[in-house]
Image (cartoon, rainbow, N blue to C red; front, side, top):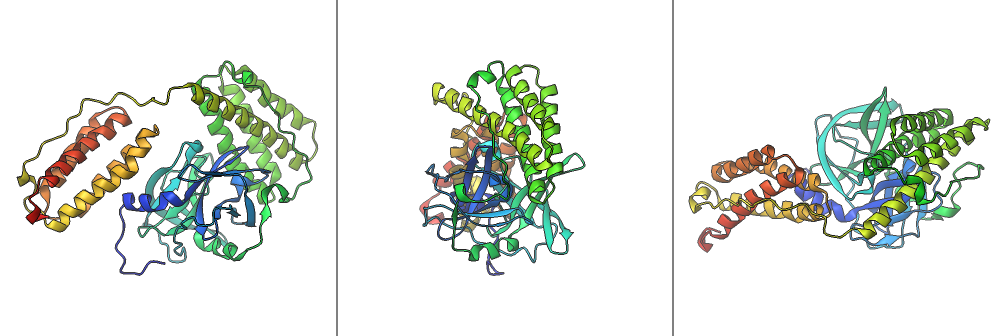
Length: 436
């Protein structure tokens, strides 16, 4: 835990430090997030991310992939799992404590929504909810999307205080995190079991259908995105219920999702028939456990074929898919812009901008334009709060943000703030060395 006198970090600094330790977890049913929680390649995630899986791939931030995954421990009540991969030298995120978390605290969540790569979002702890006398959840305002489950929730010191978990109640998405103190007992386990040998407590034989990509013949990209989003969302809700001993509730969620998708999709005749085939199969089964797994088989088969289709399309597309860069409008500032700014303030501006670009630019180049913009926006807002007596840079940043808000696309918004950043870096770079 960080000392009490440790200065709070900016969202950009937190993201930059944490991202190398955040991983993507890929299983046949979709994607999830995890993070390195301790030395020795120990990775924490939600149990529902890997529940029922016989194989998994852990993708590191640097792109390396590991298919040799062990399970060290699980906590079904808390929806937690601790995994291990052969890469033993991974940097672990510092673990804080959830015992002292209070509503109103600022938090940062990092995840892999729909497997699209790291995204960073911030918010507040809305409440600490007691589920049972032994189980609590942190309700957060930070937005989470399917695929972000299992990611770290960090405080202003960059410490993990929770593990993100998406929940649905009364038809609404509620964003929660499992308190990190619930994870700590799992870290004492040293003996692992290969994932394919782990017993999931069911004797039901999986029958995941293998579809030819022709089943997606008349599906649009929007259709495919909807299919993945709805199925992964259903799994993120249903799997924890199943693990809590409520297979009927899990089945009902899966069945409702399948029927709703069948009604919603205009085209996608092959997908609609696959969904209805899964529903019809369930009608022939007696046990709720069997029905839940039958629908899960249906979902896993569709997610797998969509994944193969997307990979094939990516292989055919040009690697250059970035939008046209708008006409740059980098402002030229006179040195007087920095009048009233202390050397420490100037240094803070330069470092914050450099940090934001270091995190945001790679996201932009990977096609995650909104994530890049949000990183830049967060840096601007953070600097505006912290720059006292340094009105010139504050004004320049505010003008850049106003220009970004006038633009319609996130790629153009990101470039508007990049222009503001580059203008400030230019004027700082022209300072006489005696003022640095």
